[in-house]
Amino acid sequence: MEGNEVLIILKKIVKGIIHGLFMWLIYVLAIPFIVNSLTTAEIFTVPTFFELRWFLIMLFFIIIFAVASALKHRPYGILLNVFGNLLAFLILVKLLEGGLVTISVPIEEGLEVYVFMDLRIVLYTIFIVITVPSIMISVYESLKEIDEHI
Amino acid sequence: MLRAIAFLVGLSILLIVMYPLMIFVYDSMNGNFYSIHYSISYVNQTYIVFRANLTYLNSAEIHDFNITIEILSEENKSIARSCITKPVLKLNESLILELTIPLENATKARYVALTLKGVIGGIYPISIKVKEELRGVKLWKVMKY
Image 1 (cartoon, rainbow over the protein chains, first blue to last red):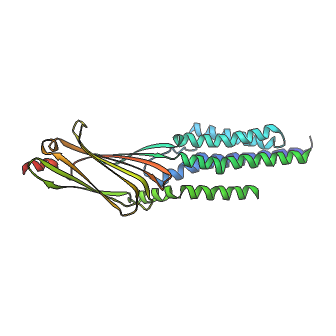
Image 2: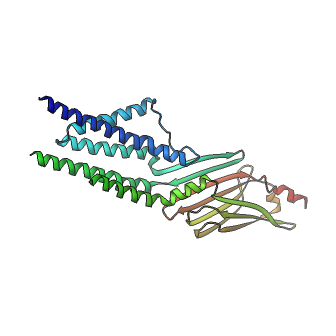
Image 3: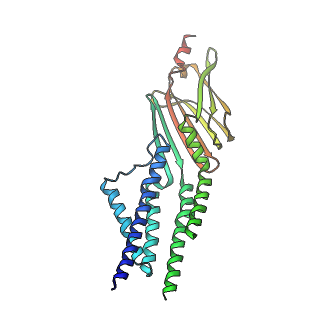
């Protein structure tokens, strides 16, 4: 393997790591943090960087997208990319409790408030307008590049 | 380029869909959801009329709005109940609910429970349950008449 080729692969891996970090940042940190800061009640458990569970999820994202990026011109690269995108969406579904959110809001003594919200439409919209296009575009771009290589 | 266009279109659709929810949450965060006042509007020897006046203070419209008010005893048993439905509830609109309660039951009243149901902007179903002690109204005072 020539030095140039190694450099290209390393570049792809770094690109994949950045992609993984970006997905983790958006789906696992940013969306829960924004939703929580909009409401008085804690809808999500906002993960901290030091929690092992969330650290492992971040590592998982990074590895998936790094490997997907390194295998860009191969079918496994496409599959891993699709898997990574679906995984990000599934984490969001899990954080949003399937879209059916129940919050207990403590206001004052002697007053109990329970709020139930059906946010499934938000999940459907995210899936249709964010997840599906990103999967389709990555598959389309990979297939196009494979075609050019052949 | 393709990715950027898809991202912008996706984000725009997401914002349009989430617009009523964002308005609702923003207004609620500023304490503008609803205000409710309880009063006893009429008293005679055998009955009292308990009145609840609800004013909606949120900018997001609520469709198929349904409010149920229930007076509960110490043991959470229902003493009186009233319900009202409105196709669309808009900002600053008021609803009045009246409950006629026999005086003997009114003395047992301890809590007032509200159940509000509706669809925010016609998209997001919401249900809110509020239970509070009857501190402001003091039904037992009626017995002194």
